[in-house]
Amino acid sequence: MKLTKQLTALVAAMAVVATGCTTTLNHGKFNDTACAPKGPVGVSAHAEKMKHRIGWGTLTIFSIPVAPVTVNGEPDRELMNQFKAAVEHCGYQVKLVENPGDAAGLPVLSCSVKKFKFRNNTWLFPLVLNWGTVMVDVSVKGSDGAALWSKSYTGKASGFYSFNSTVNKALTVLLNDMIADLRSTNFKAATGG
Image (cartoon, rainbow, N blue to C red; front, side):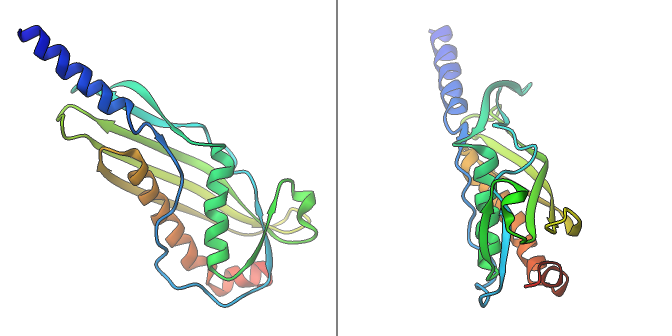
């Protein structure tokens, strides 16, 4: 009987870990209201160094990784769609750019992922804690490839059960910080906006 209870608890814990181990990138509400229309800017269609696996669901007090946490779709493209939304929120007319040569002379915003990592801990099951960090370098380059503007951003979040809400909270924190800079005169001067 005792073994049955232990096995049931283990199976239940594994089910919790196995569920919610994929996430769809979808930013939350932006802090500021949308800006008046500005000029065009390119946004790279692919984030550099963005991996499909962004973390682990774990099991036991020792946090043994048992289930990879992944991003639905094409992670590099999905992340840049979030950046595109933030740039559009600031009033820019965005052209997604597959290759820098396709930018038609526009400055192009790109992103290089330094860290996109999330974990959970199930040792307090049925309470499942999760947390993580997103760190990126964002830059704007001119049509000649010269750097016009750059800045690093970090978003952190923690939550319970679903990785989806925690990942998107961290992403929203990062994008809101970036939006504040996209409204600055330095960014406008760099993009001609």
